[in-house]
Length: 467
Length: 70
Image (cartoon, rainbow over all chains, first blue to last red; front, side):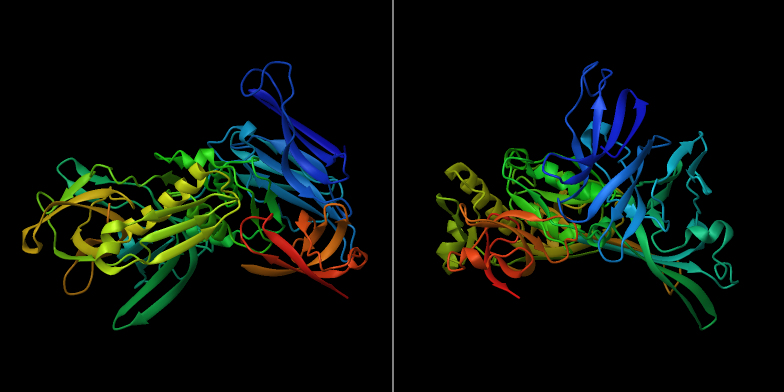
């Protein structure tokens, strides 16, 4: 053992650095129980936070642990190969996770050399990092800036695996030329929260939940106008931005798909919950790896490919949901909620026959109606994780579900529905198109607000799939 | 299918599997990777570069060391 830190918070929460019996150096979390997550007077297993194989010239030491707002952890990563270093790293737990969940953000290197690490201290309002030769302080209160009154245009686009924001702020008097002071929150990585709403008889009411992180901004000028345009991406970009620094590998039976997704989300600081997920996601414990350099988004897409479930985001909260074919509609358009424009289509799925080759089992699934009309389109899946016919059947069904949802197309443009979310099932009544209470699933949405131009705009475009 | 390069860190002649440092993974090795039987055990020298095929991009068991060099 090379280091130990402990923080009491309902249990005795411990961080340990050292090496295991095979010589692999690690940082672990563990709990000496006081009855919250661990029985009184008992030890939990060691749970891995960081790891380095024996002989890799890497070791960890000097952990420190505190709970100013969430669990915050520092430790030193010491590398003795070429370009050797002793560099403190920091990480933190998710706000809603228990210590026992062992869900940590990917440790981040600090611009500091220290063999003995950093100690963390805090009050209710501030946190301090200290070494024998330095002290750093930060407020625990996140600064915020309300730009609502300056918004000229806002466009959001949400797709199944990406989301974008374009925000145009008035800058005719140069109010955003100096991005310091309270405007210093407009910076790379700054969070933009969007809460669309309406003026109602009860006053302005809004729906929160959309969040984006700033990728860049630009100033525009001309035709008597000056603006600041902010470009931001949603939580998928946080996943895209997390790249595995090492070979992550889990043996079959070690973690189920839900737990693997939780790990990846946590590495990108994203909370992860179920909003009605399938049984497969907790029953399937695959052999799985994330290669060095691969993104969290790639890992999530691979995991989602083996289950029927889909992921959507509310801010930095990721939700997984099984888009069941019998899901009831959550909202109706075309009756009380008007439809400005509509386009409704059907299209051939790319696949109407799936062949699944497991580790022994072979299973097929068919979309007979489609095959009867226009012959078969085969997709083949080869996965050693599928060791039983039941598992192979689950996989075939999941593949067919993804195809079914994509078998319809179209879109409607409507006045903004502030509560509309990706993958909701909606009912559409549009007599001109022959639709009465027709069920569709929302597979993409965009919102446009414009206070300028010839006519103000506040509308939403919903991309449609099959239920 | 995914082709990657790596460095041999260990070899088990009994199971004919290798421990490999996949390029880009500074501190963590991938263990129990099957080795092609047409590679002689004497060629699986620690420190040599190797080529790996991941038939499944997600399942490390479904991979193979197909060559060693240097």
